[in-house]
Amino acid sequence: MTHHIEGNKRWLALIVLCMGVLMIVLDTTIVNVALPSIAADLGFSETSLVWVVNAYMLTFGGFLLLGGRLGDLFGHRRLFLAGIALFTVASLACGVSATQALLVCARAVQGLGGAVVSAVSLSLIMNLFTETGERAKAMGVYGFVCAGGGSIGVLLGGLLTNVLSWHWIFLVNLPIGIAVYALCLALLPPGRGQQQGGRLDVAGAASVTASLMLAVYAIVNGNEAGWTSLTTLGLLAIAIALLALFLWIESRVRHPLMPLGLFALRNVATANVVGVLWAAAMFAWFFISALYLQRVLGYPPMQVGLAFLPANVIMAFFSLGLSARLVMRFGLRLPLAVGLLIAACGLALFARAPVDGHFALDVLPGMLLLGFGAGIAFNPLLLAAMSDVKPEDSGLASGIVNTAFMMGGALGLAILASVAAAHSQQLLTHDAPALVALNAGYHMAFVGGAIFAAIAGLLGGAFLRDRVPSAQGGAQGAHGAPERSGNKAPAGNG
Image (cartoon, rainbow, N blue to C red):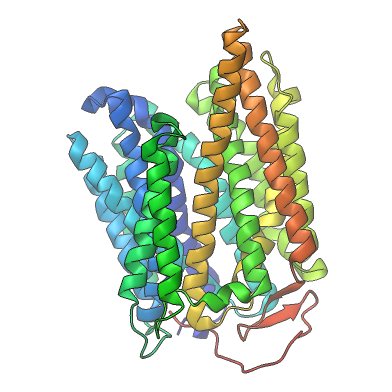
């Protein structure tokens, strides 16, 4: 059982787990920089090239809930190791790919492995650190890896593609994956699943996985197929119908994949709604600001990656230290609300960035505010999403919050990118200069992201309860005082 690990060994285990998570997070953005090189080498058309990204997104988004529940049933450590192994082998296949079909298929397998790792890693960390203060610090480290990994991927992708070749953006995962697998075997003792006697809800798993995959496909393909097209609307309708079927199944089976009572927990429900909105804002900031730097200001890929470093440094400073102390001092609600409102201000600053903008005046202030806000808010959001959850449901709760981020980010980016494109097109029809029209469209996307972040902050401030998870899987007040009593279950196992 992982909570028997003591002292520095737990923190070493945290670093190893976060290395595995970072590998997954990097892969969501490192590929974007190399897409032109991949297209030129393997002969992808503009239409088929999107499947290098979409194949990963489909399986990653579709299997998060199932991966989390499998961890609860069969052991979080076992599933984490399986996910790392699958992701590493798929990375090798991607790196040696000489055909379009092999690369796309290997990317889909990568997404499956990434979904499993993402779904169970958070529950492993929660079960490693059961004391309130240490858990807040550990979640700060995890939050920094999740929030900062994307922009590190842009920088690393540009470096590897320019210095070596696109193959190395995948091959670099091999030594990392092997090291993470070996160190996890050494550091995390084996443990059985916590749901002893539980069975996998096959019907529920099939319906929700199909629903999520169809929804992800409809969203990522929406701009190309058209948001009002029969294809997009039909896929979304089928996804909604499958989701309704899933909820109907869960209300009736003896061992549900997702106990619906989880959403009666106020902090869990609020944190996931806030997570959807915030992911929509942050995805918009990351991708649209990268496009602004490249297409409007003319930055090369390496310079784009460097431009994000100030936000990452600020995020690291607050995630790794100050955020945990703020949670211990003020609870979950105030740091989350303040952080998200500061992030909203950063997005609003980007909404005024001009065509002839300068980094120090028009980019850096927004980057600093976003790094500051994200560094403060991510820790309490993750703690809230896992609070009040029984240890035997921690993998599922981890899968749910990851799904909320994934779906919120994909949907938010699709909506805001469509708004930006529509506004730019409208200005072009009125004979506006192409660069001015493009930048005005980005402004609309930043405004939308700022609104999402502000609403998320207000909801968190209004509905979250100031409690953090206790060592018994229950909850404590901001200063460590228990807020409720009940049966004390042992902190989880691996």
